[in-house]
Length: 75
Length: 159
Image 1: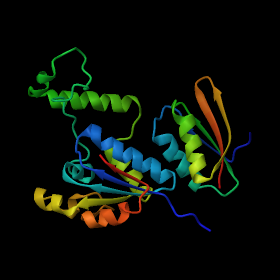
Image 2: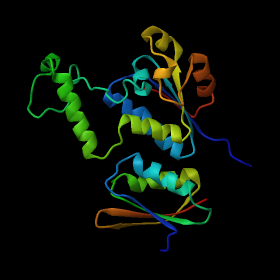
Image 3: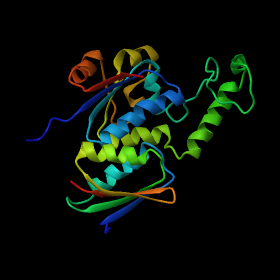
Image 4: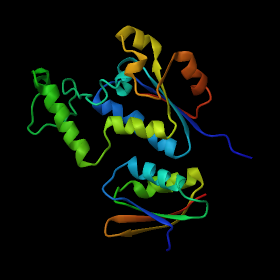
């Protein structure tokens, strides 16, 4: 999937992947797609909750060798 | 129509390194999730936003049987001189290992996310801490100001 912006949150733990995702999205335009990579095992449920609550759409989540890759569409 | 923002009201009453993290983690996460957050710092909790202290908060091994130890030892050993420093240094090592931000970094993160921080005025009066000693962006206030926010909050926690 094409992304406008990519951020690396690998090695970071809660709350930083959510905080950094929020910061990155706040610097983007509506409709743009953010790719976020994290290794925090809680990030899958955390980012899902974050997307549900903030209205930024979680387009896709995949896991590659212990890394979660999220695609979020800015509201 | 814009939906009314959710609100979270926290009271932070502890000034140890371990207990400084939960309110700041919840606040930074909620702030990221577009939740309006107020943290009321009272009693020892004021140390979390005291510029002279927040970089050197400690963890107390005494009366804390959950404190990890390199070798099994009775909890009463925690009262020996140097044990608080040892426990704190171990805790800091664990925090670094998981890449957690420091307390000053997390306080800044919260303020950047518009988390409102209020320091309890009687505590300041009692401990002689001045408003200038507090992190920039922190305001001072009393219980009524906190309650005014908390009465309309979806989450209220005392930590």
